[in-house]
Amino acid sequence: MGRLFAVDAAAASSAAAAAALNGAVNWWKDVNDSPMWQDRLFHALAVLYGIVSVVALVQLIRIECRVPEYGWTTQKVFHFLNFIVNGVRSIVFVLRQNVQLIQPEILQHVILDMPGLAFFTTYALLVLFWAEIYYQARAMSTDGLRPTFYWINGVVYTIQIILWMVLWWKPIRVMVILSKMFFAGVSLFAAFGFLLYGGRLFLMLQRFPVESKGRRKKLQEVGYVTTICFTCFLIRCVMMCLNAFDKAADLDILSHPILNFFYYVLVEILPSAMVLFILRKLPPKRGITQYHPIH
Image (tube, rainbow, N blue to C red):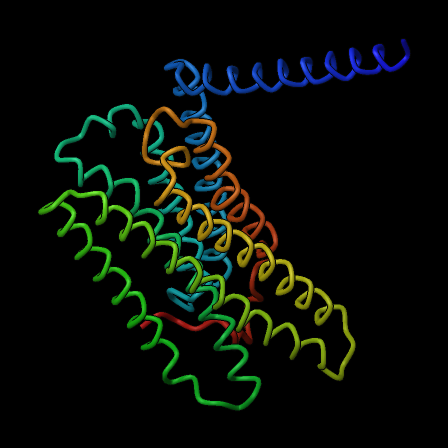
């Protein structure tokens, strides 16, 4: 009798778990298929991107008012690019329903993917900044760093444009997969760049012989930003791989608003907001050696 009761209880428990799982799946599907929820989630993304864009612009203006005599420093360009990238993303998500109707279809890929490339450039600039600090501290020449930065970005944009043109000429599934895998590779490269130069700078600061409040703050700053940026680019790489081969993980369609929301919050909005907060400190008015004009 006891054994029959235990079997019945286990069966009831399994049935309840299955019902709960089925309910969750149905809820996810209902939200994804609802035009109202699609608009709400995409507009929520637009608002979040807009907030980050405004914060970046305010910080840019504060820096310009603080040190106008230094021109376009690396720090100013970084905040300006953050303002542009997040502002464009905000506009795209406000008009997300209309973007899906644009023809030819290749223009949809360009509109959705170009801000991602600009995001890569924005944070590659931060890697360049850290690389310059590291090389200068080690009394090594920095002459080749900026040309390398420009060369890498030029190659990335050229390859992506070629992929778009081929996809326009021959819109087959293989080219879509190739384009997404290239983007995954770019994201992995960016993650490696943060791990390499952020890690090097962190270890160098850790070995610095003079203990000071400024050293501790810079050590925390580099450590936090390296961890955040490495993680976000690694997540982007994994998601792009899934996006390429699994239709259930497709980020370019309207019927996946929940996936889009969590993806963009994790890989762009949250990292950008955290990095802008960590790097909020204004440069001193005089005696700056670490902020270099962009020539």
